[in-house]
Amino acid sequence: MNRIFVIARNAFREAVRDRVLYNLVVFVLLITASAVFLGELTAGHEARTIVNLGLSAMLVFGAFIAIFVGVSLVSKEIEKRTVYAVFSKPVGRGEFIIGKYLGLCLTLLVNVLIMGGGVSLALLYVGGYELAFSIWGSIALVFFELTILTAVAILFSSFSSPALSALLTFLIFIIGHFSASLRDFAENLGSGAAKVFFNAIYYVLPNLSHFSFITNAANGEAPPVSMLGGAFAYALVYAAILLSLTILVFSRRNFK
Amino acid sequence: MSYIVEIENLTKDYEVGFWKKKKVRALDGLNLKVESNQIFGFLGGNGAGKTTTIKILMSLIFPTEGGAKILGEDITDVKMHASIGYCPENPYFYDYLTARELMNYFGELFGLDSAERKRRTEELLTKVGLDEKDWNKQLRKFSKGMQQRVGLAQSLINDPKIVFLDEPMSGLDPIGRREIRELIAELREQGKTVFMSTHILSDIEALCDNVAILRKGKLAATGKLDDLLTRGGERQIFEINVKGVSKERLQTLIADVPTAEIYAKPNGANIHVQDESDIEAVLRIIKPSGGKLVSIQPVKQSLEELFAKETG
Image (tube, rainbow over the protein chains, first blue to last red):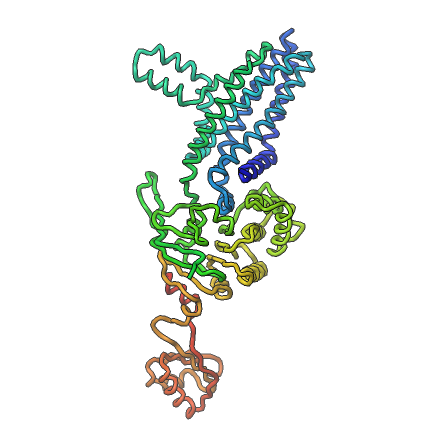
């Protein structure tokens, strides 16, 4: 267990020393700041605009980090051959994968907290005191969603190229937000095969609509505890399944 | 007798091509046993299977057939890695870490406590000849030679019983090579076993007690270095060093000694014969002709000759 945390801490340190991440966080904070001025154009709706724009930017840029850092997390280690020295130590491949995953989740958590803090400060600036606190439930949902996306990115990168892994993870991110619509679409289809296909997609791919609450948050709603608990459990189980598959693939991999 | 490394029928096929249907055999039924407390040289030309063998031993790649044990434990047991060290060929580490941080990180993976990690880090970075001013520099600023030194230091962080070094002198200047050679010799004095692959034959000659030579994935020869060099296989050669008589004159004088080969040298010649009885025949001829005997000695084949013969 200790080795997992050691690897996680090192993965976090790697991310912290990568300037690209700082740029992304600064970019989101700039978007949030610009929302303050944009809100003035929509009189009376400053706070709502800030929440919509701020949380959406947080989700998109968080997804960007989860996909690109997640994909390179393992592939970079193989490509640069840094895994050679690591696996000559008493480190199991499963420990390595879980450690790397937790390290990136910690990075995402810190990023989400900084970006969320920026949105809250912007809300306090325009007088949206209640929203400044009520959005944090929605921010937690964004974080849960990103943990699933990270696990998807790591799974793909364990057996395919970084570019293909990034593309596939991005597609899952898009489809995941529309999977409920896909099921509804399947229900209305006459053909049995198509019905089975779309239902399969619905059940196999992550249903990211469980984590969508940005519009409600902009209207001052906070996600109920049951929704938060359900989303947390869903993310935990889904990520655990994906990581198990990743470990299974990664454990058989030759590092030529 | 217990062996620190036991390799049995180790075979590795790499699948190549787009559909991975073609197989290339990198290692072919390798059997090898290595005793403890020695420096074991692992030789072979490019593509002979040296790195493949070491990678299998480190569980970086998996054998197609066969298996191996290190310290009596199967190589699939990663717990055994607590007692081994490994420095890969042309090592590359996390370039965002400093040398000190890297050593600390690997020390943590071995479960060493903080004080022990600090002590070992400082001791080893000093021992591999890395200037103290470089300890807190990020590895991305390190030259190839400095990376190599860090690679050797990290392979010893856990005070291993056996250390595997894949081309440990690669990228080092002559002084660096000498320092690392001394370090490797010191490891043997400490009772450790060093399993070392290298292309640098002078290092093998200077350091290794036993060697194994690989050729196209198969074991071509193994044993004590001295035995392999003096074995000469088919023939034993004696060198008779004489002065005061030229090569041309000797050629006419000893034409009756069929095995003799004459090599010119300043003020005399070296005569190589294959039989002790031929030595007497040559000596009988040289003295009356004004030649003077300087020395007679058996000739070992050089490691280079042995290497060329076994890997050619």
